Image 1 (cartoon, rainbow, N blue to C red):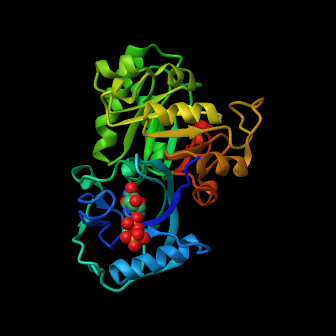
Image 2 (image 1 turned 60 degrees about the vertical axis):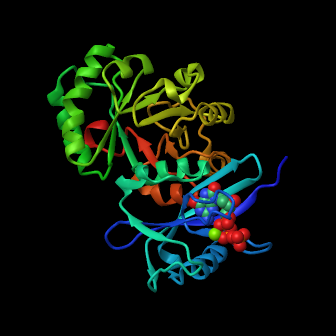
Image 3 (image 1 turned 45 degrees about the vertical axis):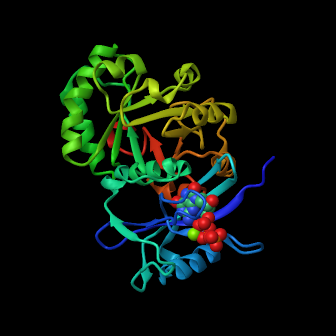
Length: 320
Ligand SMILES: Nc1nc2c([nH]c(=O)n2[C@H]2C[C@H](O)[C@@H](COP(=O)(O)OP(=O)(O)OP(=O)(O)O)O2)c(=O)[nH]1
Ligand SMILES: [Mg+2]
C-alpha cells in the first residue's frame, strides 16, 4: 500500500465568519489551486504542533489550540502521491495573517467556496464546511399528510439547534412526500436551513430536490453521484463495505449507525464511539453519528472525527 503523506491543514475563520484561502504556487504539487493553509507533519511531530508551526511559517499567526477542533480527515490518492489531509477548524488566532511565502490570500464567505478551484482532495472538506453539524430526522409515527403537522414539528426542531431537517415519511407515497417537501423547503431555506428528502434519485430529480438522502439499499444500487442533479447527496451506512461504496460513488456525506442503542431499532447492536472513530478515520467523507445520539454527544462526535449528529429522538419533544 502507498504511504500516506500526513498533512495538517486549517479552515481559519475570522470574526465575520469568513474563511482564509491561500493560492498554491504554480511550482508546487497541485499548483495554481486554492488551498487551506498548512503543510506536512514532520516525523515524530504531533499533528496539532505541526498545524501551529505551519500556520506560523506560512501566515505569521499563532493559533489558540483551545479554539481549534478536528473538522475532517481525508485520505486521498493522486496519481503521483497519496495524502492524508488532517483538517482542523481554527476559530481563534493572534496576529494578522499575510503570505509569508509570497502566496496570495483571500477571506471568503462559506457560500462563496464553490467559486474557487481546489485540489480534488478538497471536495469533502468544502462539503464538511458547508454542511450543518446537526440533522433532525422527522419521526414517522403519528404524522399524517398534513403540512401543518410537519410545520409544527419543524418549528419545534428550530429551538433544538438543528440546522437541517431530514424529511423521512415512508408511510406516504412519493408524490405526497414531495408535496410536503415543496411546502417546507422554501420556508426553511429562507431561515438558512437545509431540508433533505429521504427518498429515491428518480423521484427527487423529477422535482429538482436539492438535498437527497439514500437508504443503504438505495446506495448499493447507485451507479454514480452524477445520477442525482441536486447539491447534496447523502447515504445511510452501517459497515465498512457500505462506506466504501459511498466513497466510490462520490456521495457528499454519510450517516453511520447505530452508534448507541436506540429505541427506534432496539435490536440493532450499537458500534460505540470507538468503532465510530475507527470507521470515520478511514472514510474520506463527512460522517454523521446516528442512533441513540443527542446534542449532548456533539463534542464526543467531533472529537471522534465525525461531522456531527443526526437523529429522531433528542431533537424535538414530539419525536420522543
Ligand atoms: N496545505 C494544503 N495541502 C493540500 C490541500 N489539498 C491538497 O490536496 N493538499 C496537498 C498538496 C500537497 O501534496 C500536500 C501539502 O503539502 P504542502 O506543499 O502544503 O506542504 P508544506 O507546506 O510542508 O510545503 P513544502 O515545504 O513541502 O513545500 O497536500 C490543502 O487544502 N491544503
Ligand atoms: Mg503548505
